[in-house]
Length: 404
Ligand SMILES: Nc1nc2c(ncn2[C@@H]2O[C@H](COP(=O)(O)OP(=O)(O)O)[C@@H](O)[C@H]2O)c(=O)[nH]1
Ligand SMILES: Nc1ncnc2c1ncn2[C@@H]1O[C@H](COP(=O)(O)OP(=O)(O)O)[C@@H](O)[C@H]1O
Image 1 (cartoon, rainbow, N blue to C red):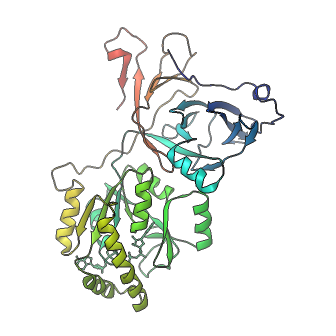
Image 2: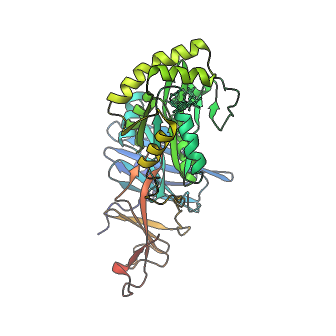
Image 3: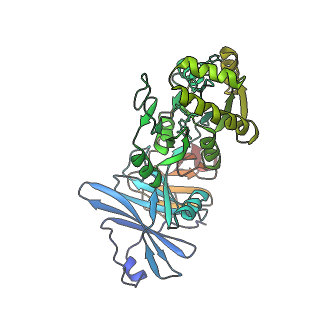
């Protein structure tokens, strides 16, 4: 019945007899994917346990240390690992907090394939698993001076518990009213370039001569607070996000005319004449791309501000026809601190007591992974959690019931 059970590696040296010396002093699991074996080890150094990944390439008879992207799980007592769909390994950590116990190590997803191609090295990527679905992030693009910031501020002011702003990084100098960490993370080009190389950015682009980018962390911080994420990014950035695993709503704000755009930039008074001219030159190409590239789901013209704001609220379902209460932040999963896990089709059974004894033990739960969405470089969403009834003759359907 069960397929792909969790593998606990007891003696890897017996299995791989090429003199490989495991560096892990803690707990290891090993999973075969095609002709590669992924060994995931937790290293217990002092009080901190960190996780490491090594790959044994069976066709070449060689060990490889991959480039590891994303934020990895930290501080846990052990883990179980299960292969899903041949492209990601689910890692369930022991003794972690409820919002930090389900992780995915992507080994052959589209994102990992792209990163392997770009870097020419072996790559794996971590993504944290979260329950349920948060509402889709909103990407807002448009030329400089069109009113993106104004519209976003109006939305955040009217619905403060519903929306959270993704704070981008930029190498441009702050304007007099801008605060570091609120409007942007103002940074040095060399630091930002290194972070981009280390895979910390969901997207980045050179805009009007400066570097701008959305870190994965910026988007995750908003999602973790249970709010809907708003991204103010340029058209190139929107294109990159479209190609990424982030499932978002894309909105382009267009000006009534380039002359009006120029007038607004002059009135705003935050740029020099030379900078305004540069922004206007770029605006023409952006408007053309915004309207014709197929990147955007919606195009709104910001002629009269109030009218444009009403249109924006309408397409976000905030025109009074839907509830404007914030969604509760995604809940964690209460796992038994020590457990064993096994996979049956798209369901992972997590048992707190002796596994394989026939009946599921008390406190067992089932994770349904059939509706997973997203993934590295962001969260993996859509996990559903069910409690297992230890008494199969009780009233609940099939002995399991969904936990809300
Ligand atoms: N790709 C990308 N573009 C960004 C990001 N943050 C801001 N931008 C865009 O960079 C451009 C310039 O932004 P900014 O310097 O704040 O000037 P403003 O648009 O005139 O207020 C705008 O088109 C923004 O949408 C980001 O993280 N990624
Ligand atoms: N519909 C509008 N009509 C007139 N002025 C506007 C309108 N929308 C925004 N503005 C003004 O235009 C300037 C640029 O808006 P801003 O939100 O900073 O643009 P962006 O963030 O797209 O660069 C601001 O001074 C803002 O008050």
